[in-house]
Amino acid sequence: MRRLITLSLAFAAAAVALPAAAQFQKPEDAIKYRKATFTVMAAHFSRLGAMANGRVPFDAKVAAENAEIVNTLATLPWDAFGPGTDKGDTRALPAIWTEQAKYKAASDKMVAEVGKLNAAAKTGNLDAIKTAFGAAGQSCKACHDNFRKD
Image (cartoon, rainbow, N blue to C red; front, top):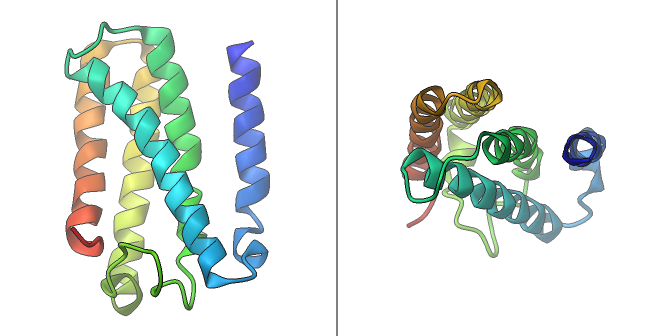
């Protein structure tokens, strides 16, 4: 049942992601979309972190489910950084738009590291998850350090 839910989520996310740029009628819509995506992704990433850091008992099945969700969500927010979305209720720094190649490289690295985390979680090996979680977390931090206010 969980696998069906995960697959359904992945399918729905892919269906939404493909025409994402076209679905934003206003910049505010794009900002809300990307913030929501990052919020949900952070919630599931935090669950993995709690296991990787020993704050909660390790559960291989729960880790794999959360990693799959993070992996799906990791591809979604990038189209929502279009023209006009640098203003308003956002913590995005102007560097996202002035240093687009650097930002694209950082987002691509994060997506790749999250993919590795997903693969590690599928093995059920806590040590592999810890290693991959650290690398994924560093890729998130690098983007936050360079492209996010506060």
